[in-house]
Image (cartoon, rainbow, N blue to C red; front, side, top):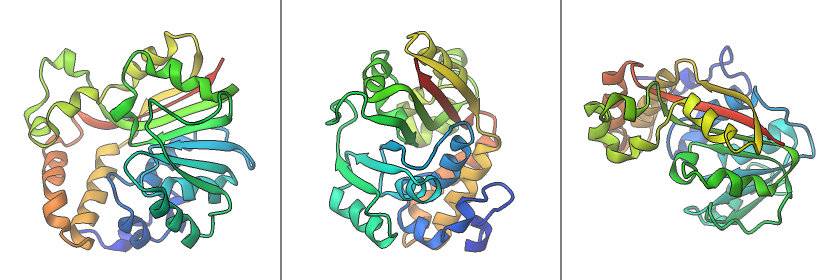
Length: 254
């Protein structure tokens, strides 16, 4: 099983390697969010002073990363995590002057239109962003030329094309896998609106291996980690990269 030192990978994720894995394990809500965000950000142009919406920010790890690594002013919006809990994370990380926690549901965002330079969503978009009408709603909050990006669980083939959810995936996540689309599905879904120009749409290289390594670390180093992570570990081992991945998609508002 992986040691904490196995989660420091400067060859693949140099920025994320500067963060204490134990700190990130305490904020765990799924696959390693900093690895996903660091990879996603390679296709973005993030600069100091930008106002960024971190949509579905969870317990706040990605918001800390955006503030520290890119000098951004971040609004951390999440429906499930209390703002006070997230704000305590930001204070402890020394970024509470640059990150504001807000409780917000993704379909009723309490922000002014054209108020963000970028919107980032890591491991959350699959829960609220698949409807045909969602992208036209979301881009209202971007300034002209603003950047939209997300990292979301993906399949290497559409479930519709397969005719069924593969059994080893269905057993663990059930119907939720219907929302795990290919990168090309997302490209079409966004591009057909003519509201944005796609700048990248790709499956993350070896995403399932990253996911497996992180799930194994959570099982090893978290209280009750074996019980809460074993099903995901078994799913990823059974999959062996055949179907499971992450889609990384970026665009600019026209």
